[in-house]
Every structure is written in C-alpha cells, then in structure tokens.
Length: 212
Image (cartoon, rainbow, N blue to C red; front, top):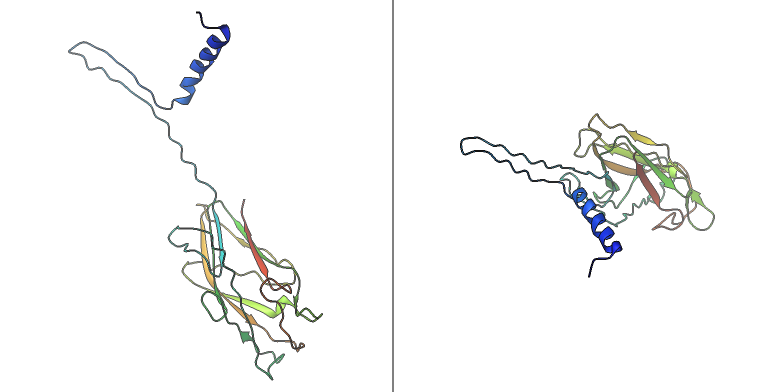
C-alpha cells in the first residue's frame, strides 16, 4: 500500500524541521594517504541570566554568599516609654529585630541597574479607639554592616515615603546593606494604649524595591 498524500506531507514537514533543532554539526573530509585533511564542527552557546532583585528588612536569608532565598518571617519592633517620660522628647530605643534592640538587617542585591526603594504605611499608628501616633515619630538610622556602601533607609510617613534611589555602577550590579536602628522620638504626649501591632491598627510597614 502506498503512503497517503497526507502522510507524505507530514513526513516531509518533519524532515524540514529537523535541521532547525540541531545546534551542533558533523563534517567529513577525505584525502589521499599523504594529504592532511581538516574537518570543522560548530557549536553555539547561550547563557540566559535572569533579573534578580533581593530585598531584606529584618529576618531573612543569607545574601553575601549569593545564596538568595525567600523567608516569610516578619519582625516586630516594640517601643515602651517608661512611666513619667511619655512625651518628654527623649528618644526611646526599641526591642525586637533580627539584630535585637530595635535593629534590623537591611539589604538589597540586584543585577539590572538602578533600584528604587520606599516604604508604605496605611495610616498613622492607631490604638483602635480613635487615638493615633504618626509614623514620623519613628526614626530610622542606617549604619554600615558588611558592604562598603550602606543602604539608606526611607523616612517613614503615614503613607508612602519619598523614594530612595540606588544608582548602579557600570556593572549594573548592586549589593548594599546596613543596620537600620529604629527609635521612637517620644515628642508628643498621647493617651495610654497600644498603638499598632502585628498587622493591626496600621502597625505594618511595607518596604518595596523596584528596578528596570
């Protein structure tokens, strides 16, 4: 039985596509016993490097070794002014943080140019009873950790902070980190209560890094 026209067409189309799948080749050269034939073969290579943007604020994975991974731990920084000192303008250190004492590890690693960093709060810290403390009362001081260039901290507000722009060098690679020390300015006398909390009463701040 002769192959059908449709089968012939299918086999022909398959034959035409086979060379497109081959990225190496073979080459046969012949010659006499006293000649020096030469044969060549070609092979193409491609390396595809994905864009990488790593942001860490607080507990997170190692980053100085290049072993980047996601960690879903959210730290809590707590400020507790002593009785009789509320609103006296003396800053209060925090507790908590992955470095402890209200201090967090902050780091950015990227490979595609400039990085923009900001922080967003959904409003002033609230006690749930109508009383509030603005995020401007929480300050962030950045000090050197491991990198030659310390990572600046966005200034917290009751909304989205101003952008911090990290300018990439000619290599387009950025590795910056810092210790971010949080303090409560304690500049206002406010009613007793617990303001903010673990993702309640506007207690959570979201840090966001973006790059081209």
